Image (cartoon, rainbow, N blue to C red; front, side, top):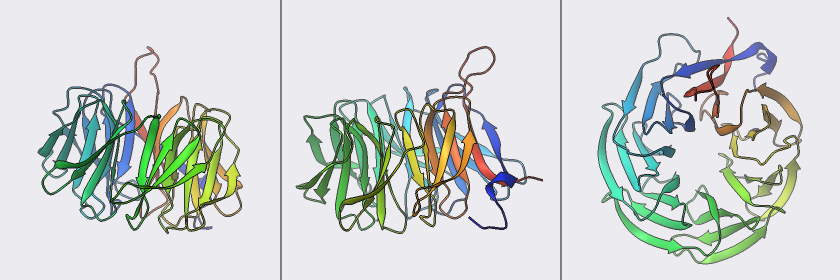
Length: 313
């Protein structure tokens, strides 16, 4: 973080548009647009100015018939986005028009989706612990694999040669890609591993667990180098900032922890009013989008997300 802008001089801005709670937030590859996926069966695209000025335009992506649980942008194309829904479909959208360009019917309720770094393949995980790999060009499945353990979040490394699964057994399964042959089983945590994030510089990956810890792993050695211990509830979501120097983690604790990756020390905590579902740093700026189980005063889901990192006017 630029020392001239200490965290305490920054604030969060709220964005509302969804009718029900937001499950997922994600930035496009150049950091100009943010997508949000909601229980209200829609996704929305928001054009975000890095300094927070100007009226925010948003586009609604309509078509899913169940909750949009996770979404991810094409890593090579700033206007293409994929959504995974409980309606068993995966859809590709053009964020400029809001139109769905491709759709694939899969076998179960989809809860996880991630792009391979070269933008050619998309991996989707469902509630039945089944993994499907889609070729984006034809939008057809090229791999299907059912696992006999709980699979939570999924990720490729930066080169796309390794594929990671976090499991309910407290392990991280490392597979080679594209063969999906097992390479390693990391005994990462004493309880289920929920989420994984790859550092954008390619040095580390981090794992968040039901034991309330975040572990940081050297990706070349496959060794744990430190743990972050600030949260007291199961860790739901983690994200590295664009330089790989900061990591944000969130849970049912009423704050989001931002820690220095090298020292493990907390540099800031963002207060929040509810359990968090998704945190994600912008790929170009220190702007952190976050969304959770916020309710309004009538105890209805608020359907908002917030972005932290704007300078106080």
